[in-house]
Amino acid sequence: MRALTSSVLALPEQQKLRTLLGEAQVETGLLAEAVETLTLAAAHDEQQVRVQQQQQHETGEGNRTRDFHTLDMLGVALYLSGRLTDAEVAFGEARAAAPELATGHAKLGSTLMRQGRQAEAANCYGQAIASAQQAVRANVLSVSGLCAFPAVVYSSYSDQSCLSV
Image (tube, rainbow, N blue to C red; front, side, top):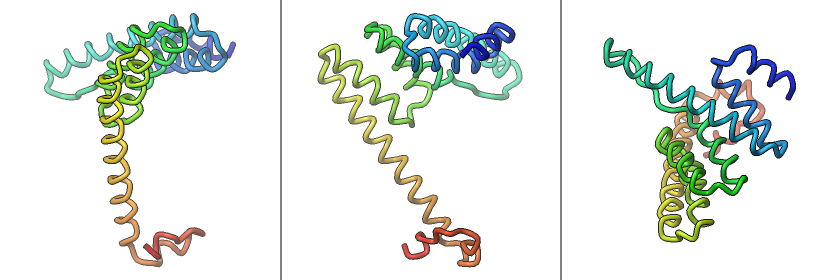
């Protein structure tokens, strides 16, 4: 973790490095440090999104949302620190950044459940299930498309199980 910390200090504008450091801090139980690191990463990410949105407005190009992973890890650090209201905000922002990911809905649901807000949590869990089902459908269609390729394509693979689908 020292090398990662040194990298963050040397390259403070690299939000992804800061996110990785925060994730490592969460995994090693350094929750207060993780919250601080990930809060800075999320703030830098938000600033970058604003700059890019301004550029988009001026040029009509690009469209970037907040970084799901940074916001999600911030939510995890806050949740594990017992800061549930702050975790709720972070998970809500993560969910807004990537509404197609079931994990954002599920983690927000868990945070709401821990606060005793069962009805809101149930709604989030329902959205998580819907997102997961949609992802599974997309994956099945993707695999089905692969199975439509000629058998010769599969000759280089040891597992040709989708040929029997």
